[in-house]
Image 1 (tube, helix red, strand yellow):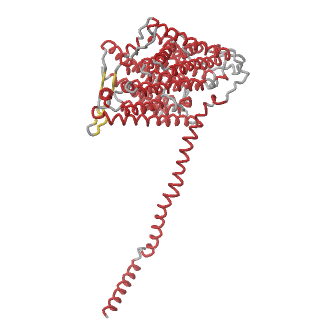
Image 2 (cartoon, rainbow, N blue to C red; image 1 turned 60 degrees about the horizontal axis):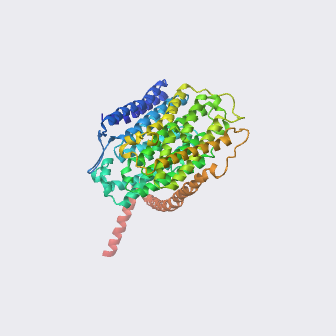
Image 3 (cartoon, one colour; image 1 turned 180 degrees about the vertical axis):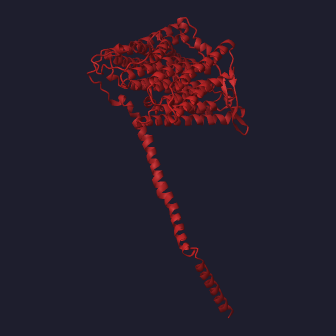
Length: 627
C-alpha cells in the first residue's frame, strides 16, 4: 500500500518520458499518430487519482499515515536523506483535486492543442509538470519537496514560453523563472537555517516537528519569513507577483493548470505543511495575513481596468491567493485549504471557458472586441456564469462558503483591518468578474465578425464537470450555521477548524454582509456593462491600467541597474583593468620571448659559433689573469 505513494508520482513521470521519446521519434524518424501522445498523457492523471482514492479510503477507514522510503537519495557523512513519500490527510487531499482537476484540463488541452505542431512536446511538459507537483505535495521532507518545487518552476518556464518563436513569450518565461528564483533563494536560506538546528535528528517533517521548539524564537521568526519568501514567488504575492500576468503568454490549458490546481497553490500548501513552525511564531503569521490582504486588494484594483481576458483572470488568481494567505497567516489552515479546493474548480473553469471563447473568436483576447457570446455558445455561457457567481461569493456556489469562512476567521481573530480590506476586495472581485462576464457575453453593437470557429464537445465536457464542482464543492465544508459539520476541516485533523469566538447572531450578520457586498459589486458591473455599447471606446489608461507602473519600477531598480552594474564589471573592471594588466604582462613576455628567439632559433652552426666564441672569451680571460 505504501508503494502507491511513489506510483502516484511515477505514473505521470513515466507518461512524460514515453511521450517525450515518442515525440522525438516522430520528428526525427517518422511521424506517428497523435494517439501515441494522447492516450498515455490523458490516462496518467486519472490513474494517479485512482491510486489517491485508494489511499484516501484507507485513511478514512483506519486513520493512518503512509510513509515510503524506497532508497537513499543523498548521504553526507552521518546525514542521510531518503527519497521519501508521505501520505497523510493533507497530502492525499492535495493529490485528489490536483489529479482530478488536472485530468480534466488534460482532456481540454487535447482538443485545444489538437492542431499544434508541438502537440507531443506540450504533453511531455504537461505531464512532467504534474509529476513535479505531486512530488512536491507527497514529499516527506522539505528537501525532497524542493525537488518538486524546482520541477514546477522549470516546467512553468517551458510551458509559458512554449510558443518560443515570439520573443515576448520567451521574455515572459524568463521573467517567471527569474522571479521564482528570487523567492527560492529565500526558501533555501530558511531550509539551511532549519538544517543547522535539526539535521542531527533527521530532516523529514516528523523529525523537524519534534525538535522545532528547541530553536530560538528569533531564529524561528527568520526561518518563517524566509520560507514565506519562497511562497511569495510561487504564489505571486507582493512583491514577487510580476511574473503571473505575463505567464498568460502560454497556451490557455497551461494557464488553467498553473492557476487552478498546481503551481500557485504550492506556497499555500508549504505554509500549511509547516503549520507546527508558524504556530510558534504568530507575529510572522500576522505578517503573512497582512501581505495576503494587501495582495488581494492590489490585484483586485488592477483587474478592474484590464482588457485582456486572461490577464483579468490572472489578477483574480493573485487576489484569491491573498485570501488563502490571510487564512493560513491567522492559523486557519483548513479554511485556506477549503478555498484552495473550491478555487481549483471555478478558476480552472474560468480559464478553460476563456480559452473556449478565444478559440471561437480566432484567438482574440481583448474583451472589448468580443460581446454577444451568449448566443454563440450557450454551454460556455452557462458554465462561465456559474464560475463567475462562484468566485464572486454568491450563495450557494462553492466560492461563497470558502470565502465567507475566511472573512469570518479574519473578523473573529480581531483583525478588523484585514477583514475590511478583504471585504472591499470582495466587492471589487464581484465587480471586475461581472464586468468581464457582461462585456463578453452581453452588450450591443459588438464589432466582431459573424464567422466563428466551432469547438468540440471534448472541450465543452470538462467545462460541464467543473461547473458541477463549482456549484456543489462548497457543501463539503458546510458550516454549522447551515446544519453542516464542516466535514473537510474536521477530516483534516491538525489542519482542521479552529474555534471561532463569535455568536451565531454575529455570524448571520457577517454572512448577510458578505452576500450584500457581492450583490453590490454585481450591481455596479450590471449598471455599467450589461448593455455595453461596443461602438464606444473604453478608456484604458492611467495608473491602474498600467498596473501602477510596478513593472517599469522593477525594470528601473533591478533590471537596468543590474545590467549597468554588469556592464561596468564587464568593461571597466574586467576589460579595462584586469584584462589590461594580464595582457600587459602577456605582451611583455611575448616581447622578451621574441628577443630570446633571435638566438634560440635552432641553427646548429650559430650555436657552434657562439660556443666557440664563448670558449675563446673564457680562454683569453684566464690567460690575461694568469699572465
